[in-house]
Length: 107
Image (cartoon, rainbow, N blue to C red; front, side, top):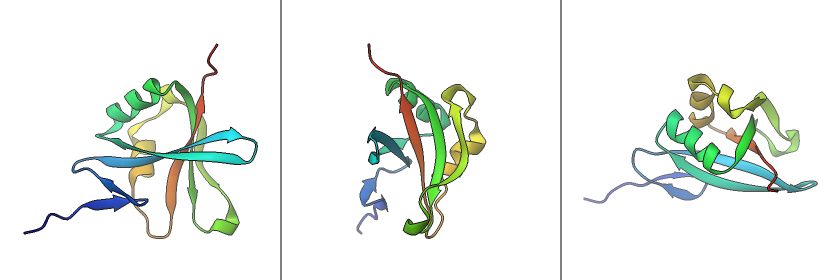
């Protein structure tokens, strides 16, 4: 019997994990996306803190010519609730959901 592996955005997703796409602006007009696997809301908040991320915007892409569409935000990471987390991990056909992240500047 072969084991089936879930895939999200082209990368294998470990069992019992949820994948969230972090999108960060690296220069004007240029973005970098990173897939992050989490166990749930608490693990998601820990990953944000570890990444020095203080604010996020919940967004989605439906059609590439529309550009980014906003769902919620920008909001401080302390204000994220189960509702926003459930929204970003829900898989919708033809709809790529992600968060745009804002990191604190290193001094």
